[in-house]
Length: 482
Image (cartoon, rainbow, N blue to C red):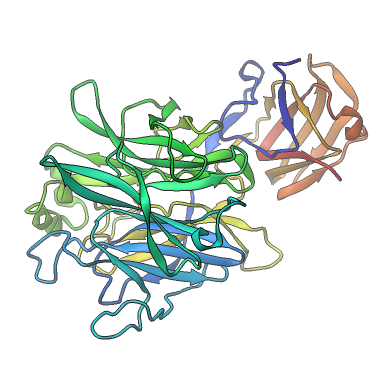
């Protein structure tokens, strides 16, 4: 009984096989991919250049905030790469779809403060902003930002991870150093985990692979007070364990199931030399031009993976891209295309009768002398993975678990002719009287399931679920109190 899985009333997603009895399950687990929606921002301001990178986004009591780093690849005469100045800019929205760049009046550019610049920084790396949800956080530190600084010590360049703080998310003041144990040259992230009762930080470092090459990886450290941090440790992977170059991490607790960490990291891919396909790939002429600054500006490509974890250390990862670079355009498919915003947010539907959905943001035309465009990408609530099948019926069977509640809600979808049917069974598979849902059909993120059995009677006792799926998918479920 002590080894029994206790799910209580938490929402269970199928982001991993934690609850699945693989021997009894023939339903297929499928990754679902985000859909590109509308263009939400254009970097047409003179201080923005041809590069927007490392977006920090979050929902803040009904206000959606976005922070981004202007990071132009070339100066205005195309003579030098990654020249300053670099600005941190701000945009906001009331629905996550329609964004504005407010005139903040903080930073002067070309003798005017009528811009959305928060501050100027001397680093090419990320400025990650989050709202600190720690109840003990002082109001003047409610918003925190991470940034990388480099110092010379004994003739060696040392990378440092620093923080800045703000009372309003707009005006930031210098904070303190967090760590020197890493490279930090990317979008490093941090947040308060209320279930853990600690701050968690994910950042970049390097390790040598089997061939002795340096590979970018993701490290984790914890803190009770955001000042003293644990010794960093590398995260590890199940699923695809190939030693990819992990460029960003984007890790954060999923809002509908906070025990589950979700990340949309950027995977960096650089082929060793120019291949014939580059001649046919969009923007080939400009790709060759950029290589005068560094081969990576012509050879490197980026896409996004999906990683999930229940303990924050071991992440389930597929080698299949969660988000591909997409259709070729004039100067797309370049190094820097597809960087995803660090956090997934819930956004309301256009039609109030529809369901809310998950959204995140990504830019195209990065570092290509073109105007960079930011697009919203959407995904079904809990819709990272599902179990399902085609018209031939398939079965999903869970391991035994203990729940707490009197009602079952499911996130599922069927065709008109399809169906889903749920059986609650005893831990050994024997049927439970009244534990048959009958046929379920439709498409809902929170469908109430009716049983003749009183679920409150079963609460606290070991059960398992047998789910029949005919042209249907199940994304998540939750036992809750009526």
